[in-house]
Image 1 (cartoon, rainbow, N blue to C red):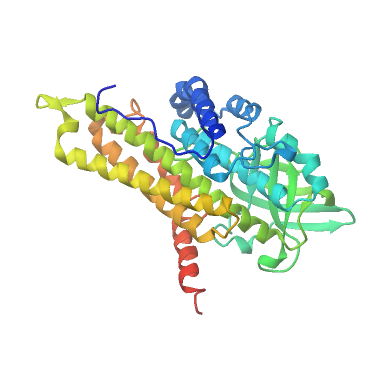
Image 2 (cartoon, rainbow, N blue to C red):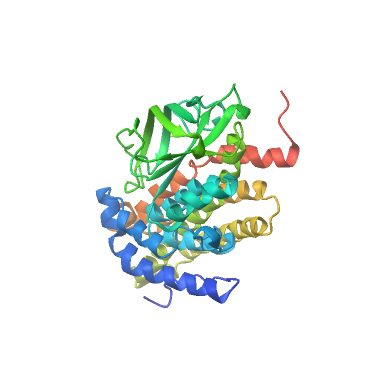
Length: 390
């Protein structure tokens, strides 16, 4: 490491407990995640043992209450943990965010009996969750989903197909949105479906540009029977449950994006400090220094934006607009920063010998998942100018 090399992120954490938590996370990253990240990603290997360790360490339950095994950390802290994990390996950081999203419906809308029955295992029992909203014909237009749940006494039967499911086929439980009534948002209900339910099968995982270690697959529900005790919230409340989870999930994506961008900046700093051209480190050339300065500025701005939105959430005030802004800005920034990192490494940036190309491929998906950035612009505009006229 030269004098120009990357420095640890100077985090302003609210408590000594939070500082200790980040120290724990960084130690775990150095021991368990970073040494195998590149190799496992190239091989398309999902780090299930890492997630078991994260669960055992309390890192899959951070924003939830202690009553049911949660860490009871504010989102301001939880998101900075996500950022650190994503900087080490996006498959892990995004996986934690998806698991947290999958737990949200039960934690926020479940009865006390439901939470007591399921949350302890979901939060700290080594289980892994997934979130099932999108379908082959309903992605951005989620309210038009067609997976149907039909009630027969105290049991619901689910039929349909979900698409683009992170952890599809390997999750232990799925939060599933299905149609129980008529068309539109008011006809949707949420269910907690076990991963081993009879009639539930996964397709072959998608072949993706990046995040090859994280399986993304369609899920097929063929007469999957779920007791009414696993219905989350009221009948017809499912779309509100989904939107509530997505506001929080978008902050998770924003934090992951800044983590990937920070990793790319660190790589670019280290490389340009060690690469010699014309008798001096290339980092001494003004054109490259300006690129690094722009990259760092975008990262700091994105971090400030997602933390500001998190503090609104922690204060119990509306944050939907700010979550959309954070997801939009941070993921666009990650794409720019990672592209510049590849450019700064020159030919080496385009090879598998350096992680810059992986960061660039991974950044792209963050502009798409949990609402494309075009959808985020629609959300922000509606908050500013009201619904579109027709």
